[in-house]
Image (cartoon, rainbow, N blue to C red; front, side, top):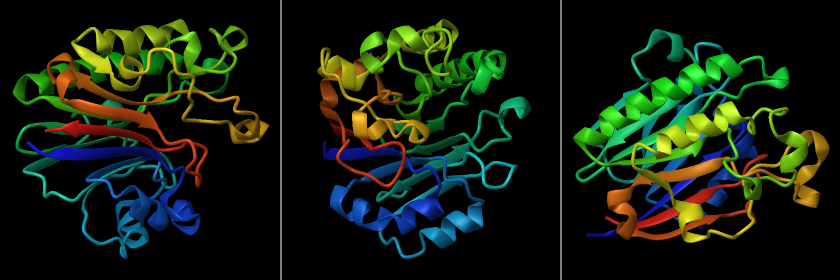
Length: 257
């Protein structure tokens, strides 16, 4: 067994993030695994942006549409196998999933679709959630999963600053999205941060348009999920909201694996 540190960070553009101190953040965090969402770059552009980052293997998945979405796993340990996407054409155009397999577990990094302004993608989001849950349940039967990323949903009123005014009106806090996330948890996964910190108010995303970080009018939409069977392996789970460089902050999981 060994202590492993996992970081998840929606960087809101890896090239922009590098200019805002991403390398220094990586050095400060000294994590074994770093999962990135919203790289907003093609594979070669991600490689170029991270060319001076030593000591990490990369799994990259980019959207067909340039400058949009995208995920990446950085791992100090070389994966046994890697894959991208769910093998469902409808859901595999936006670079939203990267997976890396290691000796005792698999790491899945996801950037879940945003339901959009006016909730115009809410129906698609519900379809995605169902497919993603099935994908994870199938994977978890083969080897335990550690799942992380930007899930674009706040589960409970404690997870956002203004629950009443946003409920069923704003992307990320509709009952459809909450139900989709809870259906995933019902497959036998736990929300590590909330399990360890049931009453802690802490956010991982702040809307830049409203300068929300200054007033801490935020949302907790970035998660680490693990199977119930790995609960005792969790040492700590935290939200690192003193780290800047994006409209999200990193979230952290430390496990004895």
